[in-house]
Image (cartoon, rainbow, N blue to C red; front, side, top):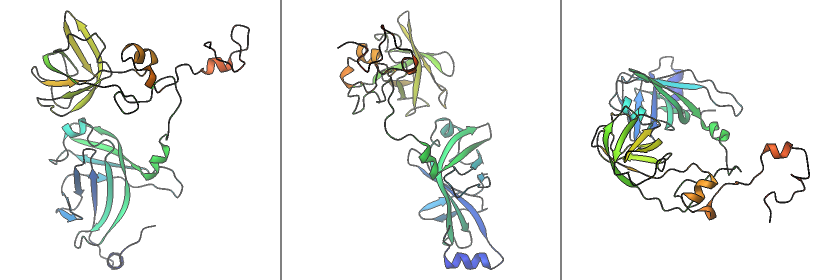
Length: 293
């Protein structure tokens, strides 16, 4: 239930209203953007709401239970702050969003109708669309650790404790939007940087971070394939840094990082096959260790 100010309630009861929608988006990099469907810019709470951006929202469907609200937002790529490069870089994924109903003739008369985060964002040549996930969406996220064979730590974090050093390299030749050869990495075995992170330090994508899908080594030349093409074309001479990758397996932790003491998985945990297998003399199910003492 929303509580309206006396002035806004009086305005709504007058029979003639001057209302508009305002959307406030706080991106994952901290940048705050405002948009409105009014034909002139508005400002309140230190945020300027840009007009004529083509930003619209669907009808909100919400229930009294904890089900996730059904709402999507869409916009045309006609604003300087809404461009394909930032959308492709994922800066709007998970961004916080607030939807306000505002009296544009007196912006102090307003009410906050919805808060949430942007979910999956899809884009085309001239526009984009995104789903909005309400506050109840957080209840769908797993909390705490989940026991599994693989490690649930992030390489180099406080639980992993591996000292991760970023290696500087340079793009030597571009094969396509996601693949290029690089100089400065020939001393490392193939797949050493697979699943690692790549950060561009120069060029059109400077500052952008992406994940490595495949790292090859042939004829002394390293090849890099990214999971997703950067928002701007990669060019020969672009500088970047890379960190080693980890597939979260116990064998990798042992052979690649010598860090088994800090492995955060359960590599010897029996699976469903063991639980459902019949007891026998070769595989007793007596609760004892299956790997000896």
